[in-house]
Amino acid sequence: MSKKINIFIPCDEANHICDKSQYNEANIWEKLKLTLHLAICKACRRYSKNNGKLTKSIKKSHVDCLTPECKEIMKKELEQALKTKEN
Image (cartoon, rainbow, N blue to C red; front, side):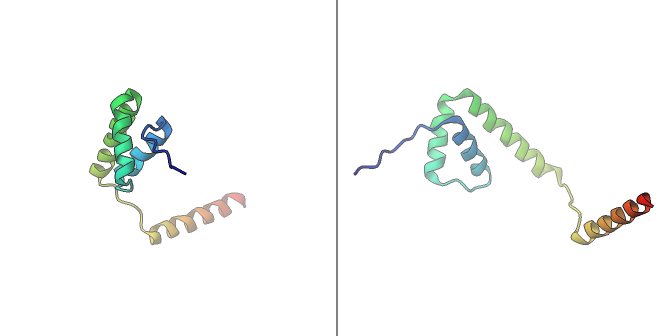
């Protein structure tokens, strides 16, 4: 029984591999299939380019996240405000 090797992938799979590749989760075989797909598919090249721009923008933004303690304080304040509003 031979296993058929398919190097041509549909666009949804190419987009998924593109996402994985940006987070260094794609293996060599997936990257090869993605490269071949991008060579023939203009829509997926555009998706990949836009995805890259988004990733760079997020990395450049230096967004600070709330600490768990701050989130808990906000949650308690919100619950208290809701109780006050109900009464």
